[in-house]
Image (cartoon, rainbow, N blue to C red; front, side):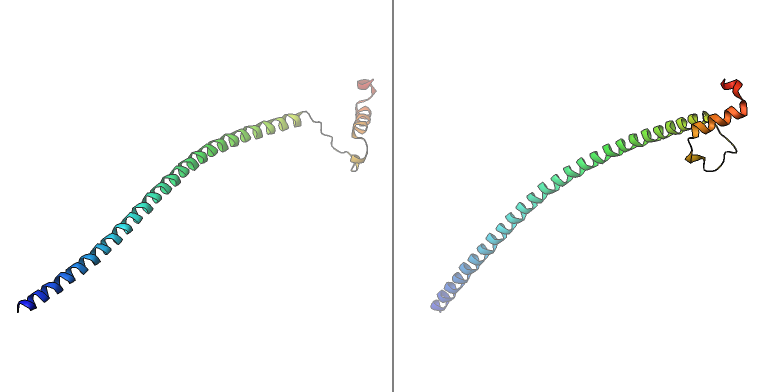
Amino acid sequence: MEQLVEFLNGKFEQQRKEASKDLATVVERLRAAIEWVKQRQEAQVLVTQKVEELVVEQEDRLTSLEEEMWMVLSSQISLREKLEDFENRSRRQNLRTVGTPKGIEDVEVTKYVASMLERLIGEVAFG
């Protein structure tokens, strides 16, 4: 009976050592996996920080470009208003002739208008 107990104790000890070895292997693999996950997480944190910095830079750039666009738009509106004013002022100084024959564009307009005014107003005014 004592031999049986010793045999069983030996078997249990062998089983305990094998289980302990297996557990140590599993624990070591888990530690390696946890370390790998930590390294990946640290890398992801760095990438996330870089992306956030780039997003902030792009937001700043976009804000700057929007402000510049509004300044250019304001300037364009001001220039358009000035152009319209200049065009309106130049039209006030134009003479309109009513009843000129069609095809007058082919003749020198200045000479035609001068001769027409001379006929209408007379030589007294142009004398």
